[in-house]
Amino acid sequence: MHWTPRRERYRAVLSGDSCVHPGSVFDPVSARIAEELGFEVGMFAGSIASFTVLGAPDLIVLTLTEFAAQAYRINRAGGLPLMVDADHGYGNALNVMRTVQELETAGVAALTIEDTELPRRFGEAKPGLIPLEEGVGKMRAALAAREDNALCIIGRTSAPSLTGIEDAIARARAYEAAGVDGLFIAGGLTREQLDALSGALRIPILLGGVPADLLDKPYLASRRVRVALQGHQPFAAAVQAVYATLKALREGTPPGKLEGVAPPALMRRVLREAEYNAWTGDFLGA
Image (cartoon, rainbow, N blue to C red):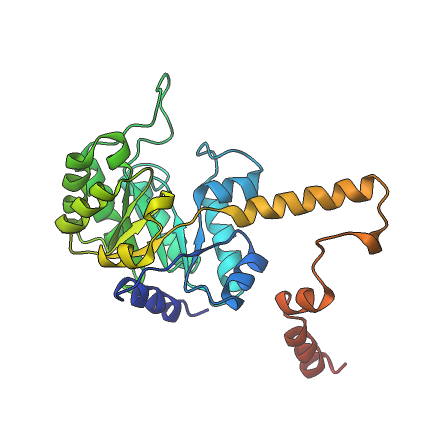
C-alpha cells in the first residue's frame, strides 16, 4: 500500500493555522468510523493499544511487534492519517530506530518518541525523565531511521508537569534543533506554560491531557497548537456497550429487544459490505 499521501495530509494539518482534535481509534472499524465522520487525523495511544491487544493497564508491557501489528491493521482498513504514541521507542536510541522502521512500514503518518524513563524503575514513586543528551540522541536516531520524509517524527515530553517549565523549554528547543517535526506535550499544562513554550519554539505543538480550560481551539491555534487530544473515551464507551449488551443477554433480555445495538445499515457500511459484494461479483462470478 502507498502510505505517503496520508502522511502528506497529516503534514498539512501541522503546517496549517488551526487546531484539530484527533479521533481516538483502536481497531479497523473505529478508524473507519472516525474517517467517515470527518476527523482529519486518528490517534492510536500506547495506553489504548495495551487495553485493546493485551487487556492490561498501560504499564509498558506491550511489545513493539504487537503495537506495530495493530497499527497496521488500522491503517490498511482505510485512509485516515494515523498518529501513534510510540512511548520511549521501546528502549534506547537503537531501539528507537527499529521502532521507526516498524511503524513506518505499518503505515503510520506520525509517531511520538518521549523522554520519559520507561519502564518505571524499581522503587520509583513517579516517572522520571532521561537526561537531555539521551533524549536528543533518541530524536536524532528516529530521524535517521526514517525513509519516507513525509513521515512526521514528533518529540514528546512531560517535563512541564514533572520538572518544570524551564526544563521543558530547554528540552523542547533541543529537540527542535535536532530536527523533529513537532513537539508533543503530555500531562498537565497551564495556560502560562503553554504561552511560554509557544514563544520559545517555531515548530508545531501537540497536546495530550489538555485541561478543560485550555480546550479553546482559537486560543490553541494562536499558540501554534495543531493537534489537541480530548482523551480516549471511544474505547471506554465500547467496553461499556459490550458489558451492557452481554449483561442484558445473560439476564434474559431477548436479542431483538437489546438497546444500543448498531443497526444493520451502519454495520454494512463500516464493514464495507458493498465493496466486498462488488468484488465477489467481479472475481468470483457470483
